[in-house]
Length: 261
Image (cartoon, rainbow, N blue to C red; front, side, top):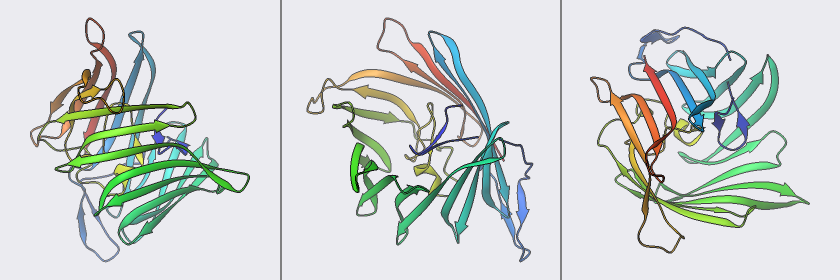
């Protein structure tokens, strides 16, 4: 199973039912309309399915409490609306805990329970600008990789990735639709936590094209990926197919089916 919470954990586990509306202890009705109910993904290699999974999103009193499949489960714990801890279980065994830290309303870091791996998020006027992945080595924090972001109208316009472990770097730019990202009605911090092959949750809209560059200083990119998206009546994606277009004909890399409450 290869879906991830940042770089620190791998997830999945159990199917809990939920309805379109829930009621809090105070008797308030909370709408779950257009929150994610189920996310299913297939990833291909040499035109064959390499791996696949179905993740169930489980809610209580209007909040996402877990994401799970048949073997693994992620449990979310909150301080008001802020996610404070994420526990990962595999076959009912606790595997890890990640702790989320904030500066005001901004998620600033995610640290594992051994306190030897962390992700640091930096912002420019409230907009994400830099994400660093680090590990502890001889009492020093070593940066393994980082991503530098430039946003335009709440969508990632450009990202430069530096991988210090492999001494590599690359730049990508993107084109988007004008429709709803699946994460629109979800807890705002989840978009920084959940990572899938097919979907970008950080941006407000959905990627249609991705361009790659020969080096980070190059000004002209080459189309490397295209996305084919099917929407529901509310302009939310229900099927996304990601293709590599760098060869003579498009090659399907992955596809995701998304169901909503």
